[in-house]
Image (cartoon, rainbow, N blue to C red):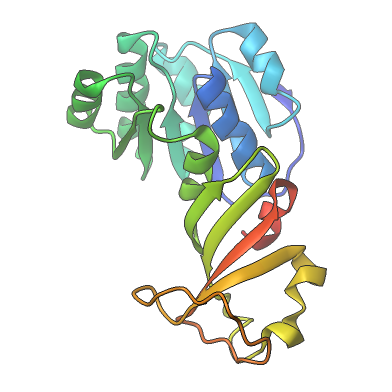
Length: 223
């Protein structure tokens, strides 16, 4: 097992480190989460080892090995395997039996998705519809309502006004200086239309949401 220290916030296990699983694991870790990355392939494990909290080679079909990894302590487990139906289903079953509150499984087509749902997956993802980066931030999304990957470096996020921002103005908060973000639109509440002509002296309310643009490296500042 390779280990890298990282600030603890939430704990996730990503099982299956192909392109999709690796992108989820690294994005979760970059946002400050504690991430256990698991794959049977040593090279894939090595490729993410420097980016996550723990990286380990293990066979998802080995119940004892999976139990030893402590997946029962995770806030969520993402089973990102499609090459082997048996491994995909076993990873999902073991995570649910371990009492993981949120099990997200990857499917390569609709039949696979239906089987995973019947197996107990709380959410099933078809990668062609959602990028790994978007999935990672939807998992983390305490105050993220929408997450758009505009490019490899630029993200656009709709987020709830943080409690500590309520009652203050954008001019007072100086979000560009503190968080390196640009507020591009404001909504009075979830059901209202976004307004792009923003008064910097308007006091923010807790029910408001903000659309912001920022560098991908600064996303963790908002989590």
